[in-house]
Image 1 (cartoon, rainbow, N blue to C red):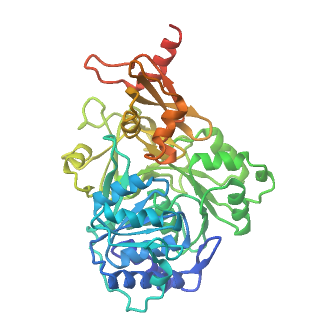
Image 2: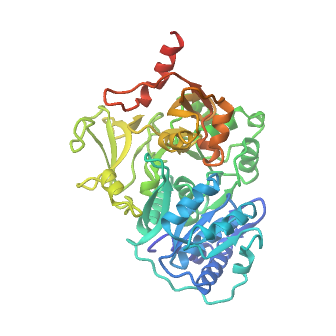
Image 3: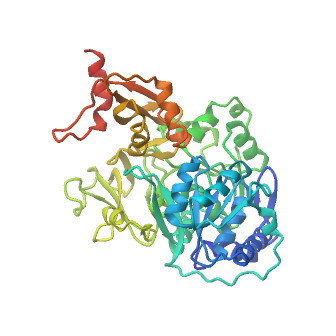
Length: 510
């Protein structure tokens, strides 16, 4: 296999009639997934999509999404997975930035995506999962195509996926992932977690996210069955795990906290679970221990990853000690190190905090169209600087302790202050703004806006939030607004985001 586009063909040859994917609307075997994605690939080629074209994929978790993903790759096109929570304006930016030739979407977004063609000159095709709508082609029409399956052979080092991640500049950055990186991440993760054809995996992780992609395709690669939830619901997740005798559940910390808090937890039979995984943000040891008690000692394996490496970089191996509070060890064949915070080229000593860096076949090819951003992230020695502060113990386990960047992780999603600040600052009454983080029991942390108003103007908290709503995905919206007379700054005038919470306490006592 050269890339993830080969997964279904290889698995169909081994497991043909076995159930590969279960959703609320339809279940599909490996053979059916392979055949349907072949039809999508042939239909795309017939409509003028050529190898190398970028095709955006915007939708909830659903069987059509999985079929479209593999169809795009089989056609030789580059997948551009989009978070369904992005606003139309954010989708427009990404589509223009990567030069998307087509976009798959759902009925609710079809009219806006069709209208987007006026702003995105490259966008020739809008394909709607739910039927013809607003100038969009019905996905069903692609499934009826009877052309010969494509014969595309991927270059392992060629471009497979452009995954956009919010940027500290206020605009998303397109991380270019190779076919090798995406396939290898699925294979290495499957190996570390001991996946096999005997596994049944329940997941509500968003398919466009690298963690969700690895959960789905790593399972399909191993011949396991994916039980895919369209969105997370604690009671439903517990019921599905019991109904399908799931061997694995995969999620972010919030999901486990919600399942443990659900009244259904006491009645759920989770005896089939052999291990679970958790990533996206730090998780408390108390939650880990509570979940492991409910699953009769089955380990909850912490992991760490990022878009720039197409998924995981570290995790616990199912057959090795599970160290609570640690993100595990590096994937096989992948170098992970801790570089000194004082000298970005010198390794830090064991148990000394530094920047978590990664090098090897998983590293992105760079940021699409932005060699300057790429150079800031990948140094001359090939180390990809993650911006996370971590340390490594004497046994080789890594522990994330802080973040160099001001990234806020809310419910497993990455949120960057500069992106929110850019929108808030466009409000006519705002003179200055800084975005800080505040703890949240459910989401881990959320954004708070600290706003200095222009003299003689006024604005309410609700007005600031509503101003942001058309321009930002819901998870990026500030959850609260504090109006302050000034903001903490360095001697050069740079706003110190890390001082915002203590600054608020100081001015409250004045």
